[in-house]
Image 1: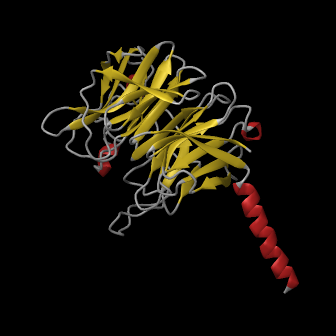
Image 2 (image 1 turned 135 degrees about the horizontal axis):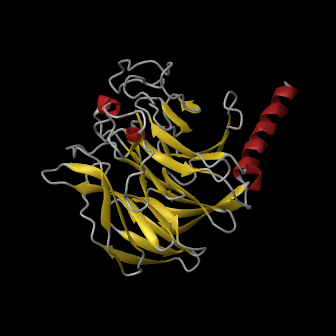
Image 3 (image 1 turned 90 degrees about the vertical axis):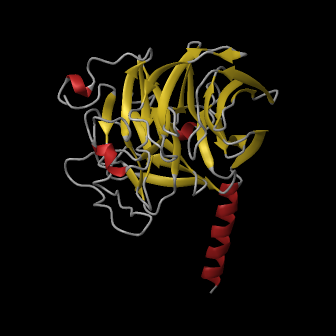
Length: 353
């Protein structure tokens, strides 16, 4: 009896000490923020789904609104989505209004300006579809390449049709031109020229690892079957032939978790945690995490840490849960390595106590 009592006390104290290992600060309130990118050590550029692009000084805690010319439509899960900055240029993914309630996951670029950014489209996911579901869409830069995730818009097997963009990973050059070593020009003659990989559902995490130079992705399953994996050229993650361990919302079966001939994810979640943005950590504040994947979630409202150095034995740990609400995005401070999160209504800072 005494042993049981002391075990309970030990577990309780351990739980509290872990909870107090980090401190959280609400930097500023926002309205449905979606994507973020550092301009410098003090300034974050963020998107709000409803159409605003905001410049946030994380030290002064003030906001400037940047005007823009994007022909966007806030429709269901769509609106302004991810944003990324490099060398005075901004790329943005968004739900483009293509007329008659048809929309696409589109990408535009423009020169950074604190007052107004004049964007020009460099990619449109075709065909445009009348649906408010599953736009994706994250952006990642590697060298002169821009990677982007395009959701399957709730259309299931469209992700197996490489003559259409929805349900695929896109790779283009930073200026929008098409790389001559994309799959279409090699072994996949029937693929659209921008497509790099097919078979994804609703991928809302995409990041470049500063360690191995690979692009990693997180993807929403249906009722279960979320996953974290690697972007692989010419390959197929299998949606909707595979169900990744999940089911349709009606409860009916979809397909096997995985089978030969399809890309196998590194980590799966059943039931769903609603995986969102990801990053591969490199920094000073949490230097013991260097090389680990940090996976945020919406429904589960958690940050998870993955040691995937041995992909046959992935080690997962919940860093925190139910601290800041649903988590949409994560950024690592470029100098000190502290973590910044977008929740449904705010920008948050996490650091060690």
